Length: 83
Picture (cartoon, rainbow, N blue to C red):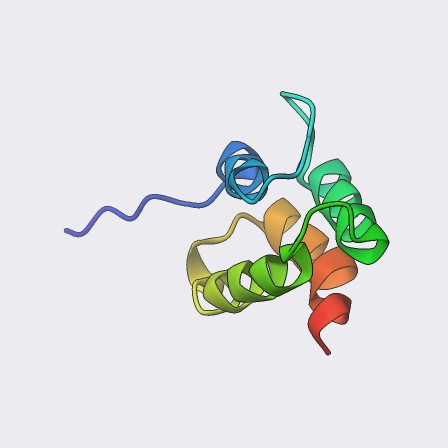
């Protein structure tokens, strides 16, 4: 039997923080994605829009291991940035 590690809210937040986005610890996926979107649109971190696009592409390829709350936050707030 294969055990797969799911991408939860903490994983999602950590990936966004690694891009240079300031997100409070314990933030839910919805809040994390909203903050990331705002930061990308404001241009507060150089190259952030491109980094977010890469992360969204990566996570879209892993949809089957995203928790539903992370998938919804991604689709609602970040996916529109790259379309």
